[in-house]
Image: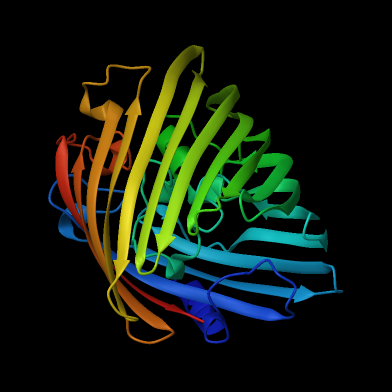
Length: 378
């Protein structure tokens, strides 16, 4: 474990924050972060956070290069530890070829980042965000590895519509998704008695459309995605029939201010078979957040967001069926490479981020959570 972390750190000495999907030549990037979590009640994200936990380490290196004027290839290797999730194994976050014919049309193929909502395809790059934890209602960190990318192909492009209308960015994709064995969904299934040695998987297809409006700084978007999952093991099976997930979002940037909003809906039925017992888990997840940020100086920024999740297919008055999170956050950049973050979460409800195996005595409905993080990137 520690040897793997050391290797990632060594790679980061030669690295930079994120893979930019342009054709500007060879790039060698990377980052490493160390987090701390302390909660007043309950243990959060499989950590022993009620006693304070440092089991929150993240690091990655990426390499990309222009093979020709139109073709770019790249790969990102990633290692993380989040409580009992992750571990010493290095995974491939994305590995792709990107052939851009012109501004109107391009093609990506391989393991490609999935564009859904405002942040899905950038949530793996901590250095670009004020927040230590993105809104968990829409971007659950314990399942980042599942949502981040798909194996398949994309078409994308940009169409300028004139100064009075703005422009449209589009992305369409088809591929396959896998539930990582070291992720949160598999951990929850294991807590319920269903253990997997092979990753459940399923086909997916969808797209994203972003309207860069004529009002400078305002962008509106919509992302639909159709997917399903199937997996079998010695102890049973998992079946998630095909469902439609949608995300509608907006962001506005003006000077030192940033505002963002997103609403997601995921109506899905999960069917778990344990021996001869068949259990159905109906879910109609409604998730949204609103956030604001202000940059006081080049080094200091602060902001807040409110994030809410509720399962409309169940009794929404019960704490296990909702999560409401009010967050206040600050960030200080020491220089171009080092930064620190500190934020406080006022969390109501237990619908997200909690695991039975790390809370054997049950859950209290409310908790305050302090999250701190230091990061290094180049």
